[in-house]
Length: 168
Image (cartoon, rainbow, N blue to C red; front, top):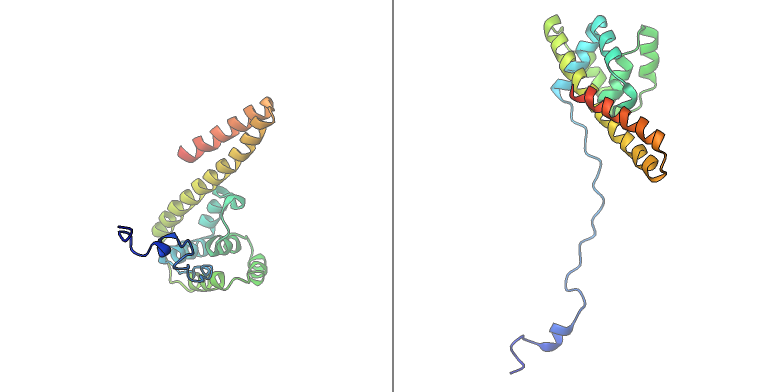
């Protein structure tokens, strides 16, 4: 009768039979050079007038810290001296590799460069607006919790403006 579950003592035993293996936290994903990144930065490097329009269109403060944005910051400076100084300040090996590849890229046709920069800058600007709008939501919540209605209205208007610019 009492034998239907096998050994009843083992059925009552609550000690874990298996333990999870010791797992190390995942290592930082290696940076992979993408052709699109190299072409974009090379176009910025090769065409100063396109570089200037990209600089005007982007709010670098809202972009995530990546090798691409770090390289872009160096490429967006206006003079050779400033560029040399910006390069000296870059310690990230991935960023240095990306800059080296972009700087050694062959000539890109002007039309292709304009297209690549336009597409990429538009995507980066939208991403920046999205990040800024998301950051504003935290402030909106705080103003709501603090019952600061004037600040809440101001922040909501600003958020709506950012979303409209991002989607427009």
